Image 1: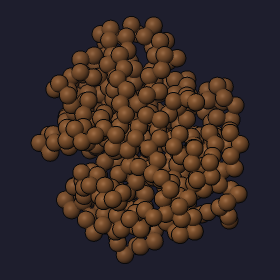
Image 2 (image 1 turned 180 degrees about the vertical axis):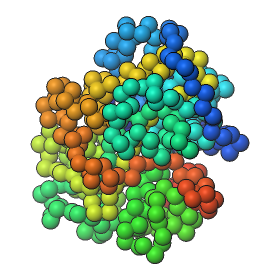
Image 3 (image 1 turned 30 degrees about the vertical axis):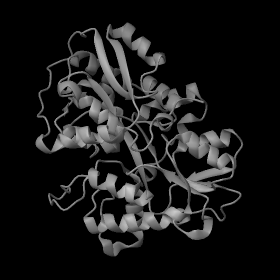
Image 4 (image 1 turned 60 degrees about the horizontal axis):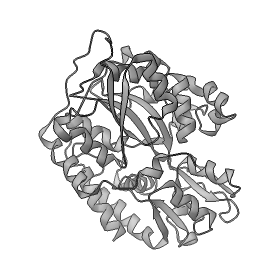
Length: 387
């Protein structure tokens, strides 16, 4: 089986030490101001990465090293909390780049841990999907704190033989119909999925953004998830967990990624997925440049390189996700026939527009009000959900 994010990322897997590190610094820091280089100079001969496992494979790292002379040293992290902690340790200068997901990127930006990137120096950025050129998870006040990389939606996965008719709503994981046969991720960001459902079904709560919740709105999401808890067969931490649940018939419906759908269908399991009427959350990763990067030229060369269609396609096929660069479609199909369609890179914008991408919950809402709940609040809430 190919390595995937979910084989190595378990929810809150970084442990309390990492949580304390990631949450204890940001309050006293602020976003770093732009200080762009005039051009990308000669590589410094080295590049230190913090990445998801599978994001720095030899298949594309070795050609990069040969082209640039920048020798890549990688540190794989098992959770977003761990990534933030690693980018802060030792004064923040140990690593040059991090492949941060949306539940970490704003923590890094507002913690002063990463610096703005001049996208004019990344030619392939012009070919990115419009929604991933300046997404709110990595762009603040018009400044790009990194470049988008790969993404995926959190879909409703179901057994086509046992879940009929085809579900069109997230009701399927909140109703008693499939009690004891439901599975969802073990991750505080799952609260956003509940909030998205409530946004559609309880408009009186006034939820506008599933990642910007007041205490009342957070309490409503927690209440929904606590009512869901008796329905859950297992909270999954790894893709293999959910795949086995569906293979064994222990689960017939749940929240998943397209990777699980494709893996199960390949093994002959009767499953399908859908984005329900309420929409879906999703993850989008960003290569972010440390505010204290010791090898900035090599870092820019890496961001240029991994933004190209060929590398984005190689990454997508290996990991089971979708590129930010829309020009990667034909390159994906050359590697694996039908891959572009399978991972939705050729989907219409209406498909993309249904996805609410992860971003770090913060006390300051987008409208400037400070009555939203923080990621720390969400972590505590998730522990209450699981009991």
